[in-house]
Length: 205
Image 1 (cartoon, rainbow, N blue to C red):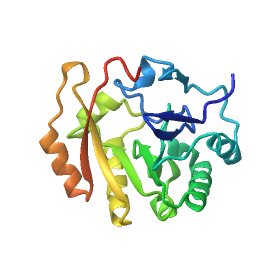
Image 2 (cartoon, helix red, strand yellow):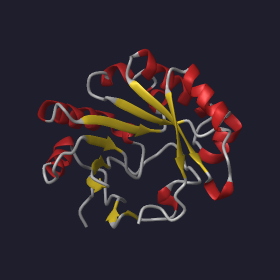
Image 3 (cartoon, rainbow, N blue to C red):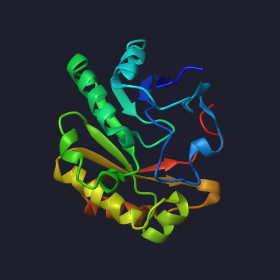
């Protein structure tokens, strides 16, 4: 079975770069499903190039927005992401490019990568996932300590570079409610917009 590196959902184009992630979020869609709308996002292997992604991208009609989001953390494939984003920027200059991320990339690479993405990425959607580190750790199950602070620092780094950034939380997981007011306050303090995403019990059908 060939890798699904590019897929379409509700008229938008998504790019699935990796299945690796530094979180094991308890509400993550991939915990319960192998596919999104019939498109299998588990990769056979991760030995592919940016050109492989671009070739799949050419099979789609590029819409108003392309989102780096799949069954893993896209910034773990930073070099490929940058090359693909550059291709989209050069060939589809009116298309918005967004990255959905857990905000751990600066910790992973031991440097601030955000300036490298300025001019390539129009918006980051960063999973804040809680009002404090205890709630974050419970919901996101990060694989290293201090992850919540790293998320907040990443959001601030995006804001400092004047890149649009949205801090998001998942609301309603198995009846659980987040303190949305507090989370929105944290987002504002970091220079970000705020979005509460409703948990989808059965995933995308």
